[in-house]
Length: 348
Length: 265
Image 1 (cartoon, rainbow over the protein chains, first blue to last red):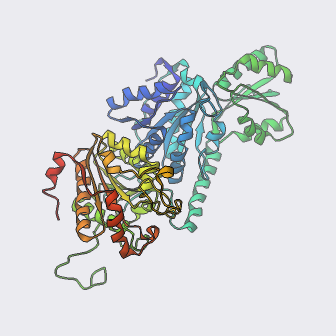
Image 2 (image 1 turned 180 degrees about the vertical axis):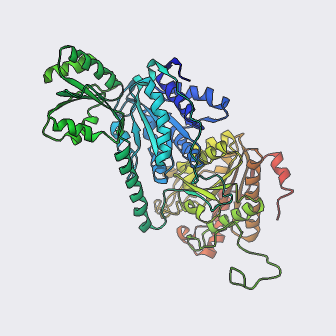
Image 3 (image 1 turned 120 degrees about the vertical axis):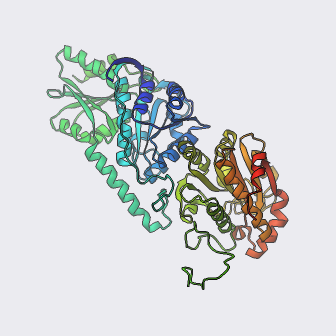
C-alpha cells in the first residue's frame, strides 16, 4: 500500500500501531487523545487483538506491562495528567526490561491545567519520568505522517532495546488532519525468548525489577545504563533544514517545529541566514550536531510550547559561548510563525 | 536415599509439591504465607499447570512468590496484580495467571484494580492473604486492621473516630456479578488448612472454566507483628480475626459448586 489518505494525528498513531503488529491496547479516556482510544476500540477486536478500556491510567499501564511480559506488542495512549499517573508502571517496565509504546498527547499543566496542546512534559519525557535510573527512548513527531511512521519505529526500537518507548506529541498535532502516505504492515514480529508464555520445555522465565540480594542490584542497573549509552550512540535522529550557511539556528520539535519552519521561510525571503534543527528523538537528544553548530559560531533560537524545557538541553549542547534565546508559549496556547519571526528579527 | 535425603518410603503421605522449588522461604517464624504457597503448589500440581500457570508476585511479603514455583512469573507494582493478570489472560487465554496479594496491596492501594477486575469477571485467580497489617514494612495499620488493634502506626490501637473501620473484602466483592467464586478461609489448624486447599483449587478451576474471577481470602498468621508467639497466634486468629472476618463462601456459582465433586480432600 502506498496510497494517500487524509488522517488525523491521533488516528495515525493508532493506524501505525496496528500496522506495527500491536496486539494489545489498554487506555483510559482523557482529552485530547480520546479519538485514539475510540479508534482502537473499533479496530482491534475486529482484528482479533486485545482492546480494553481500563479503570484508570494506572491500570492501563500495568495491563500494558502484563501484556508486554507475555511477548505481545502492547501500547497505551494518554495525555499529560494520565502520563503522570503512569510513571509507576513505566518505571517498573524499564526496570524489568519490558518493551512497550506509550503515546503522550501533551496538554497544558501543571495539575488539571487545560486541554490545549502543550509541550510542558518535556522534562518528564526525556528524563525517565518515574523513580530510578532509566530513560525512555522518546520520539517527537511533527506531522501526521510522522505520527504513523514514528509509532511504527517506536515498536521496533522498544523490542530492540527491551525498553518502553514514547511518542511525545502535543494536542494540536493529535488533532491535526493531514494527507499522508499509508505504510505496509510489518510482516514478521521479533521472537521473544524471554517472554512468560508458560514454562514449556524450558526453565521458567521471570520478568521483574527486584533483586532480593541488594548487592546484585548495581549489576542490573549497570546493564541498563549501558543500554541507554547504546541508544545515545545509535539512535539520535533529527532533521536539518538550511543549516549549511545558517548563522541563526532555530531548534524546535513537534507542532512548534512546524511554526518554526514557516518562520524560517519568511526569514529566508529576506535573505537572513536562518536554518532549523528539528530533534526527532529528544532522548537521545542531538547534542553533537548542536555542539558542531555552536563551534561554527551560530546563534540559537529555541522555539517551544513550554516555559523553556528543551532550552536546557540546547544549553547543555551549546555551552556558554553562543547566544541562546527562547521564544515560547505555555498554558495550552499554540506558538505562531509570526512570534518566532519577530524573535528572529530581534536577533538579526 | 531420595533427593531430599531421607530413605524412600513405601507410602509417602507428605512431600514438597513437584512444582515448588527446593528452597527455604524468607518468611518470619510462624507466618502463614509459607502454608498458603504450599497449598497453591499442591493445586498447581493437581491441575497440572506447570506449563500454563503464571505466578504474579505483588508487593509486600508476597512479592517473591515467583521464586518458589517452577512456573513463569513476574512482579507487579504494589496493588496492580489484578491489572497485570487481566492483560496476561486477555492476551493468552490458555495461560493461568494467579497472584498472591496481601491486605495492604489488595485492599488499600490496589482496591480499584481488584474491584474492576472482579466486576469485569476476569478469568484470573487471586489469593488474598489477610493478616490485618502491613507485614513487610513493619506492621502498620492496614485496611483490615481490627478495631482496637495495636500496630506500629496505631500505637494506641485502631480507633473508629480516627481510622474508621476494617474492610471485609470478600463480602464486598461478592456483591459484584463478575466473580465466580469467593471464599474466606483460615490457616489456624489442619482442618481449616484442608478447607483452604479446597477453596484455592476452586479459585483456580472457576476461572479456568471461563466462569469469572476466583478469589480466596486466606486469614494468615503474622506472629511478629501481632506481637505473639507463633503457637499463640493460632488462638489469636480464632479469638480476634475470625469474629471480624467470618469464614465461608460468599460467592459460588452453581457451576463451581458442581466442581466440588471432583475436588479432593
